[in-house]
Length: 158
Image 1 (cartoon, rainbow, N blue to C red):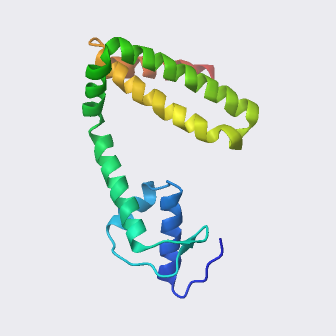
Image 2 (cartoon, rainbow, N blue to C red):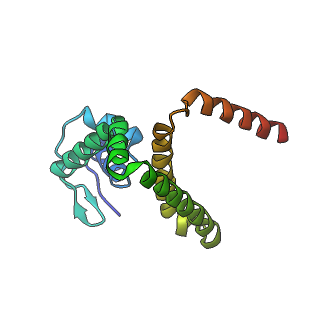
Image 3 (spheres, one colour):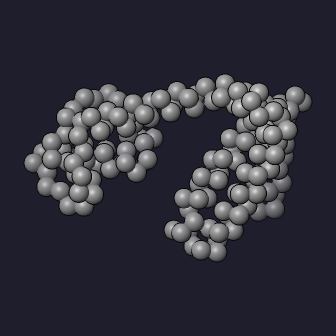
């Protein structure tokens, strides 16, 4: 993509738009919510990016962030709707899909399998969070202690 910029602000806005479109929002999201602008002549893959496009992307991200912050409500609804047994089965399925994605990533190369691997990591983490809710004796502190012990053992091996 080649663009000509008449101002530094246009270049900065283009960089932000590219990051938004690449879903690399962590560093740019807070910045873009604090400003208001109408970009002129900013293109991504031949398509002009308008202020409305940016607003829609930012608003979508805000909604997703809000849902993420309240994800335990979503998890509890899923557990209620599908039952504990169904969610245990789903956790097992997601763990299997993660194992297959890791295998595919190693076999096909990093570029070919990275998107699938990232998706399966996310799916598995979501199910792990639901497992923690469903297991009454499962405390965050107990898991944290077990993880500390395993990290310590790994450190000793290294």
